[in-house]
Length: 262
Image (tube, rainbow, N blue to C red; front, side, top):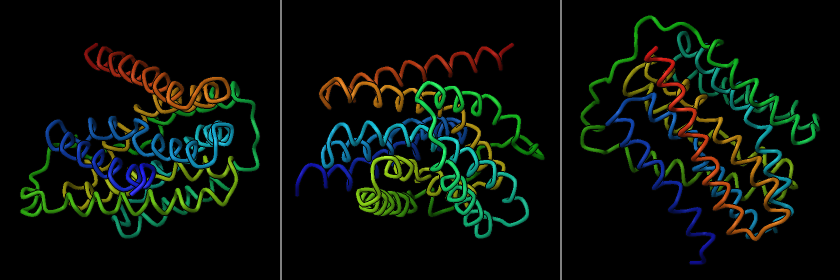
C-alpha cells in the first residue's frame, strides 16, 4: 500500500474517531469546533498536491476557501430543516443546498484577498442566522451502541468512503472544482447525522454552530496553502499552514470564551 492510499484510508477515519470521543467527553460544541479544523480537506489537498503537483493544489486551495461559503449554506439548511424533516429529510436537503451553492460559486472568480474577506464576513454573520433552540443542548445519554462504541466503526467507515470518493472524483475535475470537492461536508454529514440520531436536534445544531466558529482557522489554512505552495516545498507549506491555522483556532476560541464569560 502506497503512502497516499494509506493517508486516505486511515488518517481521516482516525481523526473522526478522535473528534467523536472529544464530543462525548466535552459536548457537541467542542466536537463541532474541532471538526471544522482541516482534518478532511487538509489530507485531501495534501494527496492532491502529491498526485497532481503543488501548483494544482494551490489553485485547488482557493476553490476550497470559496467552498466554505457552500458549507455555511449546508449548515444553515440542515439547522432550519431538521426541526420538521428529521435526519432523513434534512440531510439530503442540506447536501442539495451545498451542491447548488457550489454550482453558483464555481462561476464566481474572486482574487484571493477578496475571497478571504467574503468568507470572513460570512463566518461572522452565520451564527446570527441559525434558528433559536427550544432549550440549551445538554449532553445526551448515549444509546447502548454508542456507550459500547459500536457506532464508531460506522462513522470511520463512512468518513473513509467519502474521502476516497471525493478525492477520486476531484482529480478528474480540474484544480478549482477539485478544491470545492475537497470541502465536501464529510464531517458535517457523518458527525451531524450520528449526533442528531443519538442526541437529538439541539445537539446537532450546537455542533454545527461550533463548526462555524472553527472555520476561521480552516479559511486561514486555505489562504496559507494557496500562497505557500507557489513558493515553498509541499512539506514546508503544509506545516506552516497547519501552525497558522492552529494559532487562529486558539485565538478565536479564546475570544469566544471571553465573550461568553462577559
